[in-house]
Length: 165
Ligand SMILES: [Zn+2]
Image 1 (cartoon, rainbow, N blue to C red):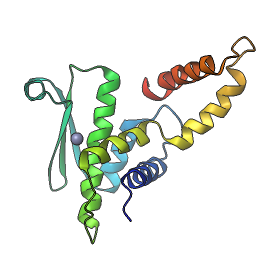
Image 2 (cartoon, protein in one colour; image 1 turned 135 degrees about the vertical axis):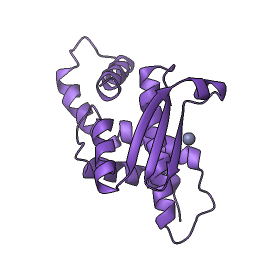
Image 3 (spheres, rainbow, N blue to C red; image 1 turned 120 degrees about the vertical axis):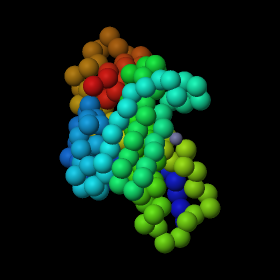
């Protein structure tokens, strides 16, 4: 049985592992270099807004053989641009897998896959757990005793570390 979430998670984890990105912040440039070297993708990234704004898009991926162009909407917030880039890489690797799959599955949704992939890539569960156990000791003074407070501190710290590079 095909499980979209699991597949996206597996691919993102495998990519992080292969590219040797094993601690936050997640370096997307290292990941892209790995894809260039090992899957022979000739990846070019453009930051633009004209075309994307017109169609109200955050990004777009174009591919001709091994040549890959990724357009990122430069008008959007940096954090969003980072997610967009990861999302477009999700499309790239999704297409890569589909091309190598023997049977196509019915319940495959490329947009859901790309979003799931981007979340897994930028905030991999394994790393989040590790970082959390590190911070939970050093970060929480006794004064911070409600679990809600702890949770929002945790979230803030994660955003700062994982997303803000
Ligand atoms: Zn998409």
